Image 1: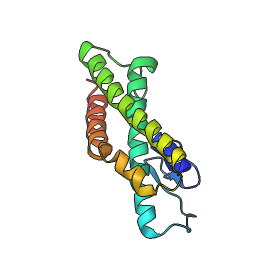
Image 2: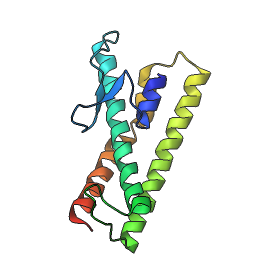
Image 3: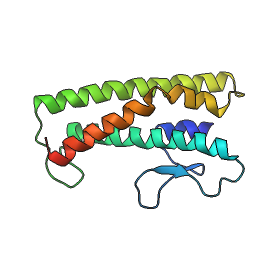
Length: 142
């Protein structure tokens, strides 16, 4: 469960690792001690963690780096700054959810993996939609 919590915040390890092409996270190939439904739950966590990392990277690129992934300078404007502020607020709620889930798991180590997945359910549709928006902004250099 601890590695699943770390994966929610974009940290990979033995259970959740980066795809070989770098485009996402996946359940590790050597994870043979989990049954299929547990691997499916862990994969949902991996997807949420990767989406979180991508959104966080977008916000940092605009606010701190001043350049997109391809090296093109960011033309910062009021709308882009407002978008990053909104994204950061959503990511703060996500980080708070992860922290409260960690507290609950530490208080009750018998909580199943489904508990963690249920805590991320609110973000399963939201984060990918926000990532599509962020990718569109970056592609069009808005």
